[in-house]
Length: 346
Image (cartoon, rainbow, N blue to C red):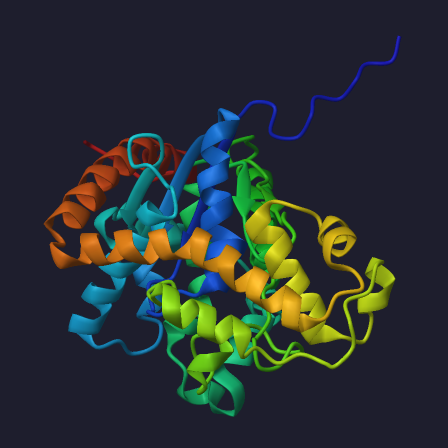
């Protein structure tokens, strides 16, 4: 009889980890691509750990007061989007020192050639790579530590972060091979949902971004109902009616983007949206999308405003989450040190 190989990560507890950088200005793209999915993961019976990665934020210079405000605002967005601190662990990275400690150990496992292949460093550093911080270059190893310090097996990410999860798998595999252990899992990237990549409302070929100079290009999670509706109604479109089939959205990036947004907000497929609105013009579709967006998003902006009015509640939630996270991370870090041969008296 042929033995069946044990499934990958069979020896590890299923655990989700993901994080968002608190660099300010969370958008509809962050909600549909991350926050909405984070909240949904709570219903799957899997332990969920979510982190505001403020150590990643300082790879480029941050105004200290702005960073504090943005960290609290991002936490408010998590909570307002449905991430329940009683069901998930929510904290900011710098409060759990095991992240930085494990990152150094993994810096000594990762290879320079692996880092040189990271496309995000090239994108962020641009032509001024020699002036970029060492942290910006090495932050994929910190991202690996963020994941592995919890023995996370699943990482919800956008398509642009998939390469970093693959690097994490390489680092975990090399550590296990070098020390002849089965200690770190090989985390799986989870890229799910209709609108994992939400595009600009002004140009459907560009990703929705807080750095776009035009505020009309995005819906901010802090926008009120009137602003949300106005931006949807003024979104760039083409003159043709919506098609009845998905194939009809080819070469129509703005139309495809709005259909995807509707589908993600309504928990429908794009095909279902076209089944309802195919043959109708944007004069009909955009008001319907605006109403849907207001229905789904304005409660989030309202709750965020309530939380930000008195950040004491946010700080308490982050502190309690950090204590819970540390209780998981500290023993894993201690085992890592033992495996690597560190002398430890306490």
